[in-house]
Image 1: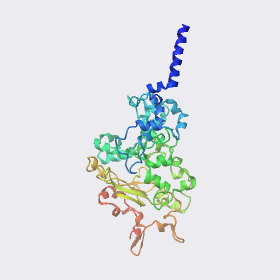
Image 2: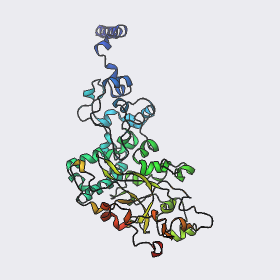
Image 3: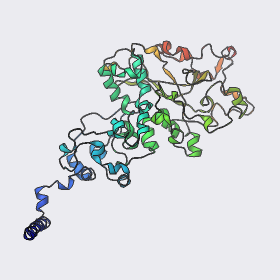
Image 4: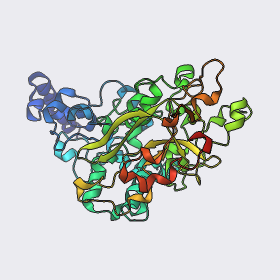
Amino acid sequence: MNKLITSQLRLLLGMILVCIVFGSCKKDNPDAEFASCEACHTNYAHLQEVFSPDTSAPAGGCGGTAPHYEPYDRVYMGGTGFEDYKESGHYAIGCVGCHNGVDETADKVEAHSGDFIRHPSMFYKEKCGTCHSEISNNYDTSIHQGTGQKRKVTMRSGLSGAQDFDQLPAHQIEGYNANCATCHGTCGNCHVVRPKIAGGGLSKGHKFTKTPDMVGICVSCHVSRGGHAYLGVSPGTQSDTHLQKMGFKCTNCHSGSELHGDGNPVDQRYAYAKLPTCDNCHSGLKSGNMYHSIHYDDFNCQVCHSQDYNNCGSCHVHGEGARVPSYMDFKIAMNPIPDIKTGFNFCLVRRTLAAPDNWKEYGVDQYANFDQFPTYNYTSPHNLQKWTTRTQVEDGASCSSNCHIRNEGGVLINKELYLFEENLLDWEKSATGSITVDGNLPDSWTK
């Protein structure tokens, strides 16, 4: 028996020696060094050799065409962040623990075969919920899934709400997924990969980032209507005072249910029970000064403290795009959501992309019930300043001189700050007329 064992050991050692000296093992299986998920996805040159070219156009939408990353760049795990990933608990789960498929093979087809999942967080309850059960259970009610947007599309289409989205014509759903849904996603789109509209693919070598990068992730989706305003990118504006003076990132204020949901279904983002408010940090606002005391119950804080903000409208999805091109504006109107934003009649509003023929390119010539919602939404621009063109007045002038409408020689000063029916396009009037200020301002202002 000992002689047999000795003989087997000699044979094994001989084979190893042959492999070392002549490289015959590598010749027999030239891809052996790539026979695992990690070995393949950390070798940039190999990924360039075996990648599959894209078969569909890059993502697009309100933010424009997504930046292009080559397929091999999108799946390369090396580089910044990969070593951090290797030290994490997620790494210990293993590739197939999340993605399924087959590990320990150099065959690309076999590795991605069977029940392979490209984006595991699409099945967040199964894949993420094992460890993050509370978050994954609540995420069903996260507005980040596009609930508010789907609600308006379905209700304008004559259905009841977001729960009926799957009843829309298949081609319209296809259009939504190809355009609107480039920003709405799941856990991985914030914590592991870039959103589609940001180019897709791994953002930091597969590192799971607890707090998403503000510019690379948040602003890539919340572009001109949020991020650009906050950063002061919008023409003629400054960055928000919370960024200038405090260095605040999005998650300094937005860290709660509006990100992950709270388990309670909401129709739109302003309906969350625990949204951040100015009063959370700025106590005693109502009695802080004379102007606050007078107007605290009249309108939201942004009416005085916002700068001009971006608007655009009348989107022909996947066709001409926004037929009302981007422009800077500032409009005060009647509160369109008084059941949600209670306590004041006036607020800032922003023109939406809604138009009766939004989906013409996808087989829907006209919405069945377009007038279900106004074409201007309640808005809270993220470009706040203590001193704005509304609050900073000439010496000796009253605060109202830059806000209230007054007649000077037949010219109505400050009228452009308010949304009147005359500001609406003909096809907007039926849907939006109810929130214009016509008949809701003091008579002396407009005479």
